[in-house]
Image (cartoon, rainbow, N blue to C red; front, side):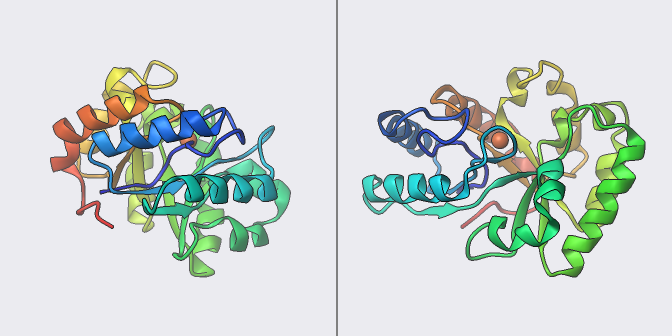
Length: 218
Ligand SMILES: [Fe+2]
């Protein structure tokens, strides 16, 4: 299956620091059953360097010996607003209309109204919006109906596999499980920053992939 969100590119964000680590992560991904990867470095401060990220992609692609890699970005909402929404043309997942969009962890429910306007704009321009790790957003943790609204708008939701261990911020396990069990989630992704995150992926996939909305294939 495809992993649609990870930080496997060497030396461009807070994920893999170098090519050797990236190749270890790739081996861990294969052991976890992943057969294709969309590389999604952070498009947010202080990491975003478009050219350097593409260079890192080519470097890993050369070293990956034919393993299917695709380039994309994890696009932070505020960074996209700073850059200008026309940047979506360069930031969607290469070869598809998918855009992996990261919202703010501490955004108020009111802020979600702004997100929805932007999402409609992106959808109107032909892009398919995938919301990165909704289980991490405080407003969603407090009110899962915000996640339902995003799905009703036509977004897909992607949970990050380390929710099974509490997640990056420690509060993601319950909302992650609940989103899955309510049938709101389309993708489980590794969101891997290191080798260990693929072990979470393997466990999360084994326990929760049956709740996904559709087959997470190629
Ligand atoms: Fe990420």
